Length: 374
Image 1: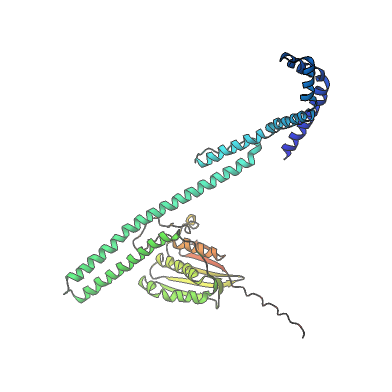
Image 2: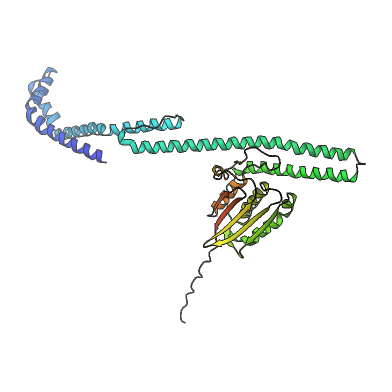
């Protein structure tokens, strides 16, 4: 707008100067004589040339002046916006530079430095996201390959032991019980691996939608510990739970149960045999704090912030017994944050702790009843 105003002012000023000083001033007589002389050369008489000069130039003087002003305005406006056009072309070229994945930084004219800085920030952000996506996809592909390989081991064992039981009906009872138990363990492990496949394929295919209601976390955590008794016993682990009474949150019970189940499964997978997993829940002001503590190998400090990334595993090397898809903690974080809470991890030489903080249920003040006298 400012450039348009300046262009208009310059066109009026220059046009007025040309009109007053040149056309109506210094060149008035000379221009008339030149025009009449030119028409005489075309075969007109002096009187005819003078008549046509009056009809063309004198009778249409206002129109010609207006056209002159418009022409001047367009000229000045072109020069005024040409700089902007050059700026836009430079910005367009640098955007193509960003899209072409070039490593060269964005460089613009000094007056466009703020835009150049923002474009460089955008470029770095896109690069980081691209690298993170590629890394995540590579981890996912690696885990699929590992899981496919691990599927063969329990399946082969199941087939071998069942074949042995089928072909030797006179086998000793103790041996039959032993082989049946081994086949059952391998079947359970095979089921876990298949579930991990479903977790991998499902993780990015659906958005988590919360269906909130009042949830008693005290009861949920106690029920979780009871349901995990068999799994804990199979690994010589115990679980103790200490919670305040009636810890109420507004949340999705199925999703929150998944958070705590993932945390407990993670603690079971990485606990030393014969140790205890401790679960504590208490109220701190407007928050409910839930802490899962297990005794196992410490997590390096530099990896504590990465364990909540999808497909991330601290040990990097899969184990046929504890190997997982690396989704449990990532899903737990996503669900917790959707509930307005936080989740964090800390580790020492003798224990690892996961802390979940969720907003507690706030009672809504009862609406005042309005009455009137009858």
